[in-house]
Image 1 (spheres, rainbow, N blue to C red):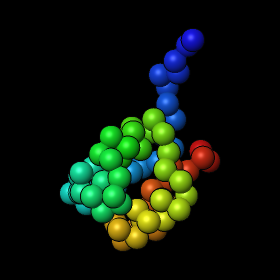
Image 2: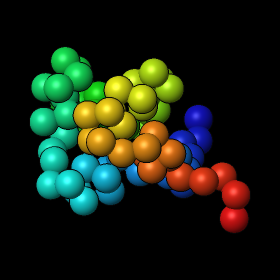
Image 3: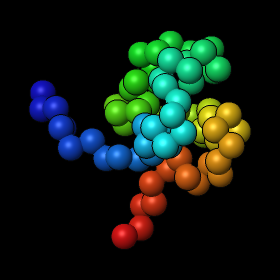
Image 4: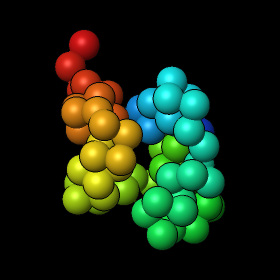
Amino acid sequence: MLIDMSKKAINRLKAVLAEQGKTNKWLAEKLDKNETTISRWCTNEVQPSMDTFVDIAKLLNVDVKELINSTKK
């Protein structure tokens, strides 16, 4: 089995957290999630649900669109 190492950067969660000085641990506590889950979201290994993106946007006081990279060039 081949592993695709070129994961698409679908979300900007890591960047937005960094811009706001927030940590994965902080987000994990706020969402009652495991830190490993947050880490996997931040590395684009897996994606949170759209409902979770909305919850994250509310916590960070940003538009949900700021958490997602555009698919258009």
